[in-house]
Image 1: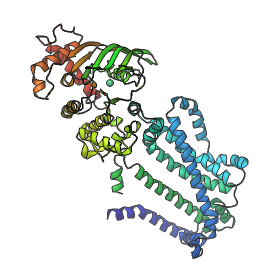
Image 2 (image 1 turned 90 degrees about the horizontal axis):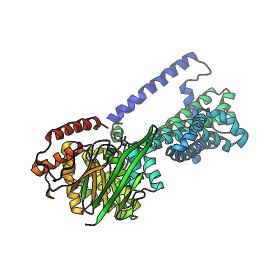
Image 3 (image 1 turned 90 degrees about the vertical axis):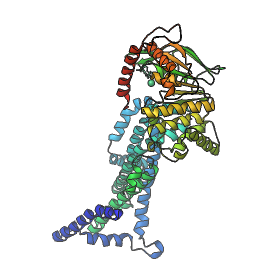
Image 4 (image 1 turned 30 degrees about the horizontal axis):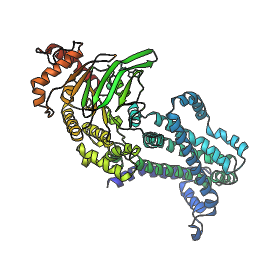
Length: 266
Length: 288
Ligand SMILES: Nc1ncnc2c1ncn2[C@@H]1O[C@H](COP(=O)(O)OP(=O)(O)O)[C@@H](O)[C@H]1O
Ligand SMILES: [Mg+2]
């Protein structure tokens, strides 16, 4: 019962707003704002009208959407590995942080889309350039949160680890990493949405295929319903990534006080 | 009895931003195998510093520490430490069982044996049923018992304890004190425990070392002539106990060591003053 009530509460307002949008767009009849009842069928038409042998998915999905999603996830994963590994090491080194603080603050302050032209010049047109842009943008939240998390390990744990003569890997993997995980997950969720943004931006600017490219193409053809279909898709992707990561986080961090309760009442 | 620990001329000076701070002066004493020795001193007199130098966590500025004759450089393998702050010392992401098991990795390679040893150690402290819980699901006293089990699981030849019972309520403290006495009797452990609690030092110790105010140095090495079998009510009410604690209180207040082990007229006024100060101290730090 509780689950159903929660579900209704979470989605009622959303459905209501979509309905209002439907009414308003129909009344205004603006060519730039097609009603949801046109966007929905256009989405089916664009992506879900393929042959049964290809799981009803269209060529657009295989040629443009899946590669884009794959690049986003790959770039994000590379950023996660670099960010967590480097972050934990830097976070435990006061000396390294003294030298690198300014550099990190500077790097993080650069709006990542500005790096797209740079990667375009250095890596040329194609997947490596897009990956470069995604990694550069997505690495900062993970890196900075990992550093913070590693620094938050208290002095008693440092003493305890030393008193038990833990090895370097045991200390890093068994104490620093788990202690930093709550912060790391916050960083990971932030960075997946940044990865999504950079995937689109890099494909908008310079690409012959991909989700961003299709979005631009629809706009060029005055296919407003198609354009909105891609915008909605981006929203769905961002939402799905976040939900999936939250689920992983709840599993991995179930040791945290209050987590079990929070999970039970959802 | 063979000598387990030999501390000679130990001193430590911290270098801080505004100069140097002499935390412990000139400390010398020995602990024999199987003994439980308590070091008692007021807060800030360098008790933690003393334990940290003995455990090899920090290198003393002067002096030497020998553990069964070998100089201590870095933390020796057969030494274990129990810290006051159990909630920070335990790993919140591991179950109780895993908390005890995890540090055994450095000395026991077989997973099954680690598991068995951890189970055994939890049994010693009466926590067999709590292995699957997370530390935060346990009371403070139970958490400190987990920390004690974790220390014992490695079967150390010397157990160091830094005010282990200072953060639990009085009732739990009594239980934990008796648990410590029982466990060390069963396992013939050698224990060096520091505390600011006079009664605790006398109740637990075979010997009490009285540490002076900062920079700490040992003013007296007192034999506790109480029967080995101790009881929270009758032992604490016995005249020997009362005399000993008065003597320790007097010494902590800068009194000269008595030529006879127990003075005929205990200085109760000094004792009460000290206890009042100590109570205030405990209150101000209890919520940390
Ligand atoms: N890392 C440190 N750096 C500088 N001073 C310290 C440090 N640790 C402790 N001290 C100082 O040394 C003195 C003794 O501290 P400590 O050994 O913790 O005393 P106790 O455990 O008896 O309360 C205190 O005055 C404290 O402020
Ligand atoms: Mg201390």
